[in-house]
Length: 196
Image 1 (tube, helix red, strand yellow):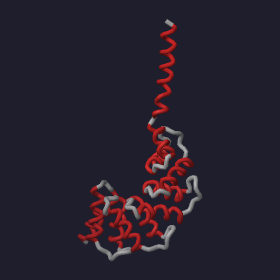
Image 2 (tube, one colour):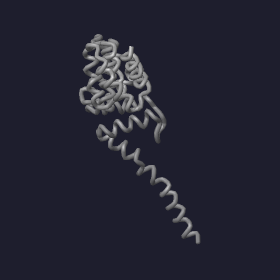
Image 3 (tube, one colour):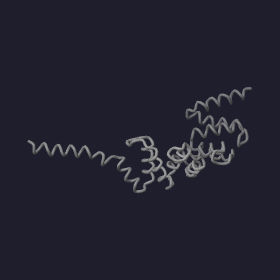
């Protein structure tokens, strides 16, 4: 009987170890270490969010940087956020904008929106409302709700573009259609202004 039980116990112990060897994180880490940019980004996100690994922003930034330097837009955006917030890197708005620009130039809508905000406020770049509108438009045309709202705002106020209530309403309507309560409120205000 012992001859049967011992091999069974060893087999159960080995099977218990098997998932850690074959886990998706293990495979991802191997790909990341081999230079796969998507795996590097995914591993960075796992560390950032503490998903299946202990939460560790320093390791997250390390993996984001590796992917970002290979041109992976999502990682460039995350690295931009890290520099903006000063998370495990020195807070550096200019460096933040550099990474957001790299992602924005690849069509990354969230980075385009942030770049628009940077130009509208002059954070990390000279203030330039026309440039802000350019980046917001790129993001808004991809359906990015925050950029749609921002375009509505600049057309309503005539900042960086000629004041145009119809164009403001168009962009507010698109954002409202995606659930933006602020955009719905702005549309209501535009309608009230028309009736005056």
